[in-house]
Length: 361
Image (cartoon, rainbow, N blue to C red; front, side, top):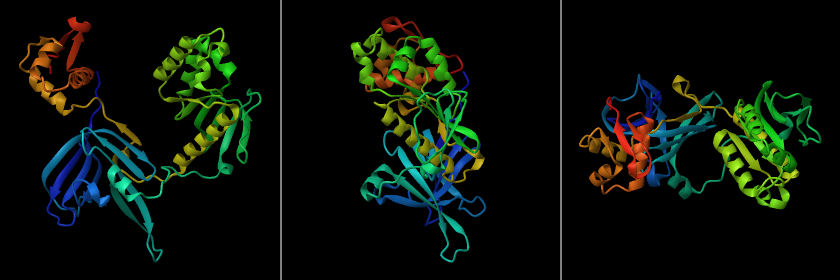
């Protein structure tokens, strides 16, 4: 099994009185982000002003204060959202702003470190994460085979044969998002042959953003008189399978033709806003979304220590006896994480199951 390299949140103490800490996001030998900060965590201060670290002028770090695995890290326009693998102080944002000098001679950068608690206490005006421009700027392609298509007033509409889906948003002559439209009747027909439906949805997965928009409510597919010859339990299982196997495709039950049309326009506007939103610069070409593999939590580390005293092949009950103060669910999750990393293997099921430690581990 190939395991992706983890990203870590590293906090170091410096000798600077104004910026006593340096905060870095590192992965392997590379530094994804490095900032000089005034405290270990914003807390009740609401937000902390940060300065981008310059290796030529920054103070030398004196000691490492903490190193925590990053669960995920995602960029939303001017915001970088980070989740850490710990129970407290685990979620925060960094807001990157570009300000104009008063004399108009240029721009400068401002960076603010914010937490959920701070954002709640400040009660700032609600802002969307992406910029939405007017509908007249959208270029929407409607599949030539679409009968009685939706309309997008004020947008640039074009009829053409699409490789997948019924509606597509074009940005710089490339498809940025695709929507497959289904009426109630179409969806019932598609559910009757799941293999063909899976093939159609797989085509949507080839695009960066895609959605299956249904002009009906989910509850409508649980009413026997509306879905003949299908039955409610079959429909519920089919939709669950569809979402589980094609997680990257949004399945949206809009409720009606009008609401499906409105939702698709809003979806295309949001996608267009993401494309146009200026992105702050990070070294190493960091992607917009970074997710770490299964992480070794504190429970996992305790499990690792406990396994040293157990035979190579052991039962879950033996581990449970050694770590009786740890909840059973946490132990099982730790074992699953270690299994995903190839450190242990499970043989059998239920009470007869046995766990085997990897020799390399």
